[in-house]
Amino acid sequence: MTRWVAIFEDDTANDPGGEIRKTQAQPHFAYLAAHRDRILIGGGLRTAPGEWYCGDLWVLEVASREEAVALCEDDPFFRHGLRKSYRLYLWGKAPCYQTVEL
Image 1 (cartoon, helix red, strand yellow):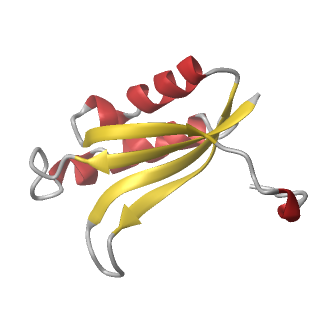
Image 2 (cartoon, helix red, strand yellow):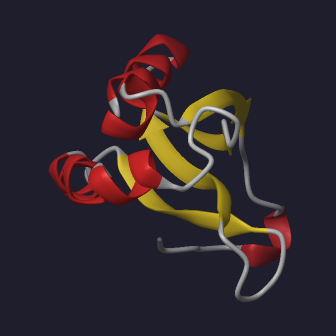
């Protein structure tokens, strides 16, 4: 198993009033909960406190990049057009952190 970081960018032109994020929030949260064995942590990104969301960040632990892609692209936010793009990076913690629990 390897850890990956997924950084999502929202398509604000496709969702100017935040309707996709609002209507798909509960299905998105249910999706995260259903896959919490592989999506270890996730959460919304903002440019500043109080600003509207502009994307998300996930830390995944999966067997392959293909599994990470499948998880990213099956998320309701992605399937309903909220996501403009996402980037996947293989992630390893720095040695000075020793044991890290997520």
